[in-house]
Amino acid sequence: MLQAHGFPALARWIGFASIVFATGHRGVPEASARTWRVTPDHHGDAPTIAAALDSAQTGDAVALAPGTYSWTSEAARLPSMLRLPPGITLRGEAGAALTILDGESQGRILECVDVGDAAIIEHLTFANGFAPPERFGPSMRASAVGPDDSHGGAIDIRGASAPTVRHCVFRDNRANKGRSTGGAIAGAAARIQDCDFVGNYAGVQGFTNGQGGAIFCGTTAVEHCTFRDNHVWGWQSASGGAIRCGSASIVDCQFDANGAACPGGPAGGAISAAGLPVIERCVFRDNFTDAHYFHADGGAVDAGAGTVRDCLFLRNVATCRSGPGRGGALTGTEITVTGCVFAGNIARRTVPLGAGLGGAIFVRFASTIEHCTLVANSGATPDGTGGIHCEETAAVRAVVFVQTAPGQACSGDITWTCCDLWGNALGDARCGTDGGGNFSADPQFCADPLTAGEVSVRTTSPCLILGAAPCNQVGAGAGACTASALESRTWSSIKRRYR
Image (cartoon, rainbow, N blue to C red; front, top):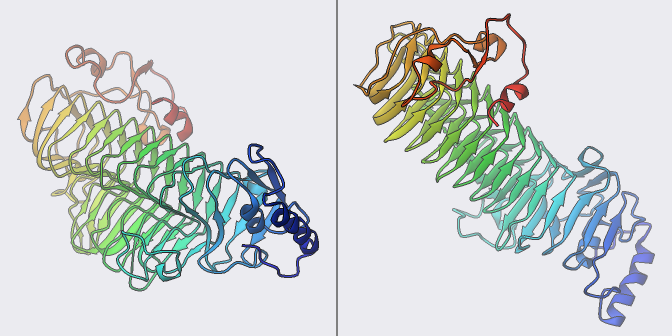
């Protein structure tokens, strides 16, 4: 839609448009891709981004010169500042830091309806987008509960769409009406790569329930992204402080200080997944769930029936004021957890201080946990469970449990094989069934895992010697050192150990 609002380049644009209408095509051969350049002063190939997108055809690119493009400068109207056509690339010429799309908290920034899988969005910052109530959208989506639902504060992806979003920054976007999904991005399918999500919200106040503070998705692939201070809030429920997904793939991402809070039953301070997610080589630090009643699940992750591999969980917390926190780091229905490190995670009741269930892990049904290291996780009180709590059954193989305090190392019907329980506050007894090959000995970490971030063990460790076939190595740390002084490490260097 061409919008005439007195821009300096309007006369030139009208002249170009008259050629288009007179010749019956857009002035270029249909087989030739074209780049439409837009500038903040409206002196580009089109006066606004919206005008360039209107003129672009499949295969074209719209390139934005450095600067800020706002709801006001685009003369935008609800529901969205921009609408992406099929097969178009929208990009910032100088990178996300210098190319900003500012929704000014007036409406959504970008709408992607039936754009296919060739559309690309890259090198842009999306700031201050606000998802309007669904009644302002182009159509009611099948999943909408009511006309006041809100979806995708920065980008809303719907219909036959699976765009690629890469090298972008999303900050201070929000959805806050009815069922609020995706403070930054909402959509069933996409590929999201090398993006940063900071301070996005789904559900802020009032009668709203937030899902996915940064991203609400189905089968989306999320790769090499960072998530910090994203949150969901709900009047009745809230899930996925950073991501709420179905069977997504989430790989090589970092999650810091994301959270989910509501009166009863929040899930997944960083990630809440309802399907079969695959979560690999991710770092989760200082994420939380917080409830008033019932329980709070998964301070970092509520993984459904998925797979969690080679991840680090540090200082995540699940708290409830009058019920138990469950899974300070991780909860799951039927999950497989392999090669992960859990350090300093907490599950607790807060008013008054009471027991939590699984400072590190809480599982509901048959699950498998193997080759993991659990260090100094807490169930808040001596009658809590600091390590693993299972509601039904679990198989735990080649796992190291050390320094659990306060609380028991485990609770529930667990079958233990080739595990090392050592130095736990209430003793090193195993709950459930002894599957053989278990022992209690100092694992001989190279350095204190909580102060130096080191989970490798000395070459003399019983986790290597006693963990011989059929158990192989016990725990997540490789035999990579001899006796040495503590060495400070960054979390990025720790993360690389599990690639």
